[in-house]
Length: 265
Ligand code: BT5
Image (cartoon, rainbow, N blue to C red):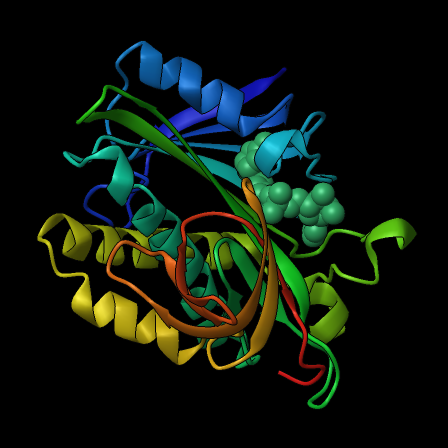
């Protein structure tokens, strides 16, 4: 694990990215950031790596993280209850989506709860360009800290085994994208949404999120910790939960893996 330098960034972000630790290779930026958080490093500290040797997805899954992507984790110390933590995943994914859309003009969609999707050409299926992992350490009623990881496929090669569902920005644009520019934009957007969130101003964020949702209005099948839920995705509530109309009535889903049953988004 080689550290290539820590610096205070000169960007306009007020919280997120005030301090950035850059590494060539780590096991996972999540692990590194959690250690830093435990040691008391400030809110907004970012850990970024060129390569992760043990990149993590949710539920112990692997996140493929070769050179060319943006793999980063952010330490946050919001004064919230554990129930509100999914909102941070929403904010992170919205920040990535808006940053990509602004810089590339590519159409971007959000697949609840933690995927950012793009596609080659209109009419074909969207694929995952970014995944978000939000982990927390918390007491019963108060969060101690949150570490949110963003994994963005930018110029990295997607291994054949993942190509059915994963895509990188390079695949769509046809050339490499300046990662520094995208990173700066993502951190600025994350900062803006996070400041609104801290001011309890989730309304506009939720509206923007729903505006580019890939699941709302669609027939979905969700693998949840307590079974499978099938129905129409109706809404996303102010806590970031998905409301689904099923044959047994409305259900509120807080976590799970969504499969969109309608072919075209
Ligand atoms: C996620 O999990 O999507 C969360 C990914 C978070 C990654 C970031 S990178 C920086 C930080 N440090 C970490 O160690 N992690 C975070 P999940 O929804 O469980 O999706 C995982 C699944 O996505 C895997 O089981 C694969 O099927 C697929 N996958 C793996 N690598 C991928 C990639 N690079 N692009 C798209 N899909 C991928």
